[in-house]
Image 1 (tube, rainbow, N blue to C red):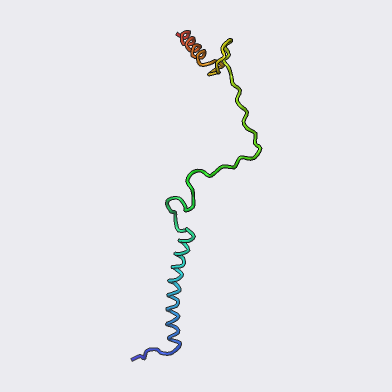
Image 2: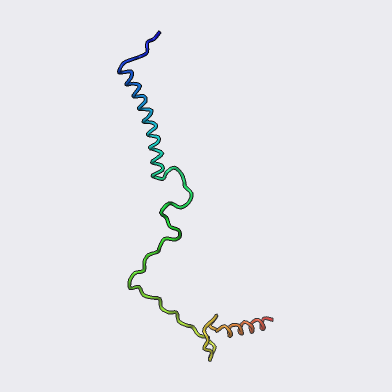
Length: 107
């Protein structure tokens, strides 16, 4: 019958084995915690924390920028008509009248 091993060296080997197992478990747990803190490990659904909805704000207007020039108001090209331009140099009523004339001439 074999005698059980005793002595300081044998007990130190057992302690070393237990420490190595504990160290491996701690390394795995540390890797899990790093993944949680750093945010790796695959895609997450939804917005990242601290992000706002919508577009990012554009550049701030520079001081001393010139304003737009007002558009030139075009007038109707029919002599004696002072109404605002609508299409093809005519006001709305003269444009419609010219379209009616063109439709009659086609027929």
